[in-house]
Length: 72
Image (cartoon, rainbow, N blue to C red):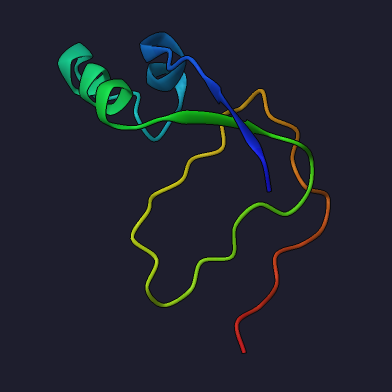
């Protein structure tokens, strides 16, 4: 699973409903401490019990048409 680093845009993050109430300095912190990566289409992550990362799919990315798998 190869990815390509992308620039972080405070304006793009601030346009997402999850981050729309954040102040500019909070968005700057997310860009400074986080990262944006571009992946080829397909399944990207399968969060397990020890997952410590928070991931957000940016709106310009294509979505996976398959429904999510239900937990067993």
